Image 1 (cartoon, one colour):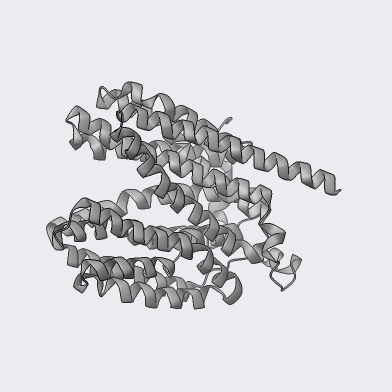
Image 2 (tube, rainbow, N blue to C red):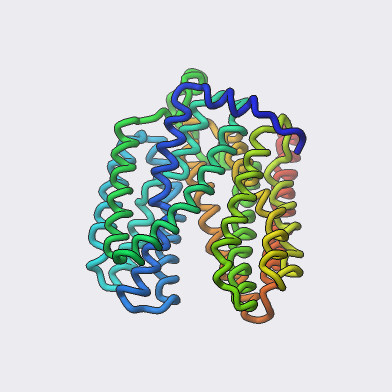
Length: 398
């Protein structure tokens, strides 16, 4: 990607409010990343159900989030951040403070509904940071944001396990709920901007119709976002299967940390270079590098080394899709567009994990890496075709 320069980071961190907002969004995202693990442990331990039942509860929540992300984003665009936070606060409090007392069947239903009205902390963070920095510095700040998300995903599930094992799943659920409510209240009080002053001045007060911005280039970016997470989710499932086959499941946490650190370093490099590949190229390379990982699954040390290159591209790919959205979508529709990006991420995870699992069940763990990696490369080809077709149509229209 070129030489890494610290100057962009120093420039971004000097901007008003950026450091405080990044810290606030990191803290707000940790309970969101702990949610899935907390519910899984509650279903298995407190409700005495199997992991299949726990997975179904996770699927219900995932489906709700995929449906709700663009809806909540549209609410942000049309009615503002504070009203959206109030709606989400009521939903989060109602779910998390009643979940320990619900039967499994009711938990499934409420997980779905709560997911639809969940607080969109991931997309809110990207929106706010895009508004706080000039367009030329958005790559850097969104790379930093992707790095912060990695940190949240390291902290959240670990906290859920720690609280559940040392107290109970009920305490863990109440802790997540309280943290969600505090995050919503903090964001309501701070009320960070979602559009810069220049964007407000340049654009009319009316929100543009969806058909004007949900075009081929944006669809290409959304397909790329989904494809990247398909690969990453497939890698995680394949990793668990590899270590289980070796009889070394105790290494799982260590290798996940290796993956997260590689992604953090990749995000740091991406945010500090003057020129970088676009999201399609990054996602294609991410998938390509995942294909041969299974050849090294005989040893946890070799597997850790093999996982570094593809995970090095994780944060850059995620950041690149966000940067592309800020270029392609008017700021008055950015909330819905970021919500669609969130849905693409969610659906990618929902496809990637079972795809890898199916392949592994009918072959072996090395094929899990290979098939999901190859799928990523093919999806990159689809994204490229969508982008080229949109460019061609635009040239014809001229």
